[in-house]
Image (cartoon, rainbow, N blue to C red):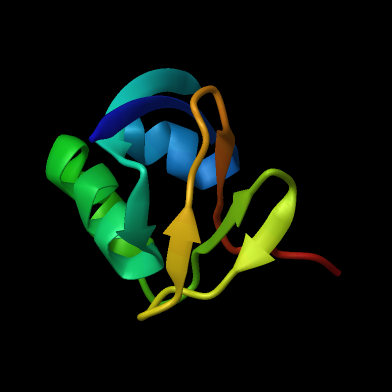
Length: 86
């Protein structure tokens, strides 16, 4: 069963995706890497930050991989690119 979640893009990820936010339909249970791949399918330029990107679901960081996510309708998924500091 698919549900709708809000995706928020920050900094470079917003530039690459061309949007700051959107609502997408994904399975309620999805692995974190599958969620990332769904976003890259929608916005192929995001692939450029794969090695540095961090996702957050309900304001908790998640690792890209086999971690199984249990999403709820209306959850927020944040795409946080590498942040350069100094």
